[in-house]
Image (cartoon, rainbow, N blue to C red):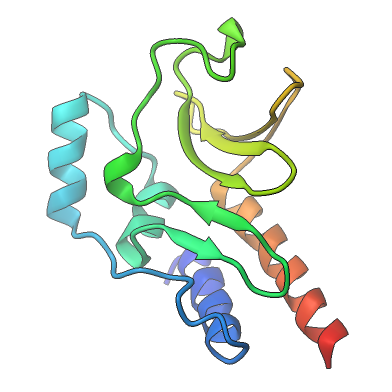
Length: 146
């Protein structure tokens, strides 16, 4: 089992036991991913594929968490600028953090980038690192509520 799948399983278990049952969706199939890659002439990175094979997007809204990854059918590389910043051409928006204006993107080198709306600065990490960080935040919120 990959690290991202193990993290997502742990996150799903925590959500299910803490009134977050609608957080994850049914997964997409490997065939759907392959068809999308052919149609868009893009090869997705393994960790993004693994995410979508686990869940077709997620909407983490538990204990004021607002972390979202969009459904597979809504992802696409942007050929125009993103949020009005020309230097973000070619990024694929995959989600957001509701409330603070940050969006979650992947660049063509498969770096996950969090871009704050109104600020051209980006923070790069892997999708696994992002999920790991959000799982830690979720665990802290759950522990605080006990």
